Image (cartoon, rainbow, N blue to C red; front, top):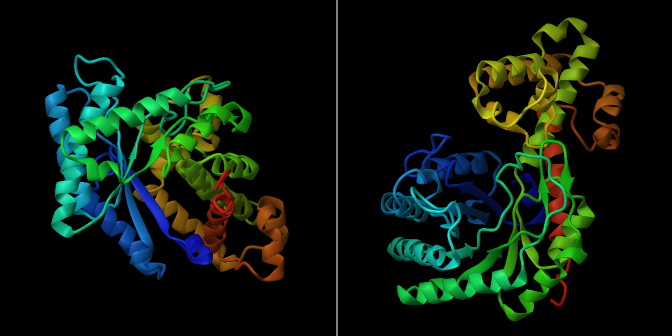
Length: 395
């Protein structure tokens, strides 16, 4: 929100169906609960609510895939209605996954028919409050949160596959009387050839996605949405935008940057007071992750020491699931309080937070620990902000 304030821009914040749904999701938040949490932060940051856009990502039967399709889709309909009723405006419909006794991935026809059912529910709910929704369709995306295996070269989505997706959805929406909703489809999700795993990032190559980008010429009014663009260099982000991937999703890189800054402050505290090591944030997070391994154990393999490295430093950033725990919150506050008493010396900022050193020296950046962490996250968002100012090819 601070970044959006600086840029005079909107802040688009999305929740996905597994995180937030009418049953609570794994965060324990319903769409209304998540919205209210975002509003509380906005009020604290003095960010106008009318510049906030909330989105629902991958809305479909995914959380209930182990149920028969009829029951899973009933839950999906309830979820979509809850998102729209809570004021979410950007709706990504994703019904590509098979349910009980179905193939893992469904064909375009059935996917589009199920998406149209959800669009109809969304439109009916929106009509109650007078909302106008915008939609995203398409499902060919990287694994949420990063790949589970080492990745190499990726093939972008084929142009003909995008065209087929759009046409099937157009027919399906028309068949249920949701033509108006289809006219507000703003983007198609496609794989441009980006991904990351625990220790590798596949960087975007414009030339490999030339055919895919060229397909936009026959799809007036549409752009592509790219998922898992985390850790891409700014030149690659700018190329994505220039090639028509106007919506760039980022998530783990933001919490990765937060963790980097927090650990840098932890190292500073240890250098200043060696006995801090026994109270360190890193030690506290290690204890928390070992006591509750559910969020990382299935994702990090190898020798115990390598698993320890991944727990703290992996691009997949599974540690992000632990920051809201009471033990982690207490450890962060203890670190902030400790450094607040002693201050953060600029020579140690130079050593452990070199990207922030010039701002600290000039006085442009407060040496308050919390401000330092926020600034590290803002720097990542700054790359996206700069990239999204890139003129689109042919625009």
